[in-house]
Image (cartoon, rainbow, N blue to C red):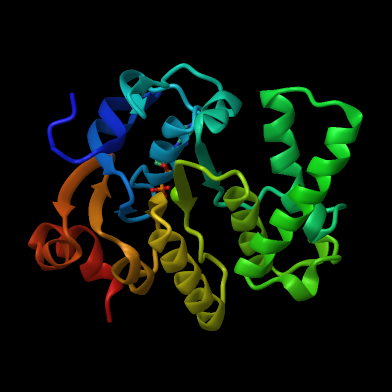
Length: 257
Ligand code: ADP
Ligand code: MG
């Protein structure tokens, strides 16, 4: 199925998604290569979130398949896909508001470990120390060390998104999916997030990013797929996509000054 020489981490193969009479996704073919940042852009209602939901098992496509790491994951449950190595930052942050920032970041690491194998009490104590250290490391990465003990519910929207990113990073995912990671952030916070995503990229993590902010897209993407009305209307390197008249018409033209 993979057509290129590169290592394809995720292959969306001929996916269609219908909601009643609405064809939300049609003929979607997408290959995400190892270590690359693949952006999906398109106007509101184009089907971007639907596509991510299909990839993480929240939606079951009407037809077609999603292949992750050589295995068909269509039909698997979200937590199984997560265990297999796919982490996602949601459009609306999903955190534990009553818990501290530190406990929020430790939680997915515990969940992952408990899902993998059972440990005895003493080794649990030992592991908890390791997980705490690792959580602190990722909290530092997202620039939130000063807020380690803050209740997550009290954080600003931008901080909640950064917290969610740290919760993903501690899972060491093979593929990270980001649905509008800078939505609701100030320009300063957006730039900090771009820097952080660049750093993650240097570590070789494969990412799919959905983003409205063209500054973010063109700062980060190796490849861009443009969705409009459920179809991929253009695809390529950022400069090719930027110059494509169909893209300008469907999307950029209405957004650019
Ligand atoms: P985007 O993320 O690109 O803004 P979405 O994927 O959220 O677009 O939505 C694509 C289309 O599918 C929209 O017309 C939306 O109203 C519709 N849609 C999304 N989810 C559902 C659903 N669960 N049931 C019915 N229609 C949906
Ligand atoms: Mg969306």
